[in-house]
Image 1 (tube, rainbow, N blue to C red):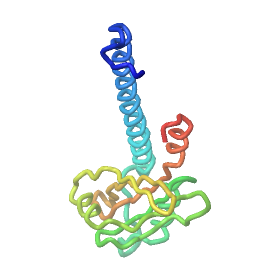
Image 2: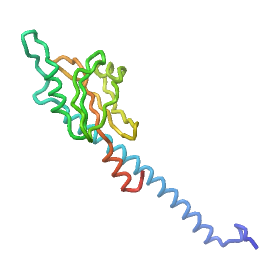
Image 3: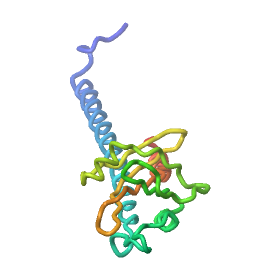
Image 4: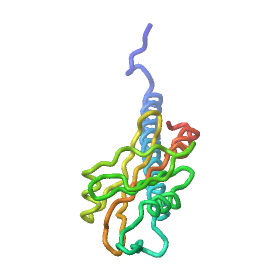
Length: 175
């Protein structure tokens, strides 16, 4: 016959209750730890990306008889800032792409520019990094003001792959 719960001894019932409470606490702590590690990885990647994107020597100085800035020099700058896992685009105030580093294998594809975010960056507001997943590609997009002659004239859009962070979370068995 089936035993009813009250027929089980008090010590067994208390043990089952404590095991259930312990399992709930450990599960909650595991979820909190997972979220904290994921947030740390994304924030750390974003801060390293922003730090590496600052052109040496501060704002870019215009050169040439018409005080213009050549597109080839912008392309060279985008190429120098880019890395094997980072794509850089220099975007004008109207959303046009002024320069981009040539893509190659392993470098993430840059998404289309978000004009609302670009307007916020140009207005001096801080835009949080965007976390984007599409076409089986998990990427982090950071927008940063781009200055020529101390005047913000565009936005650097930095796109980096989050594959390493995803691999780490997968190895830990959390993803």
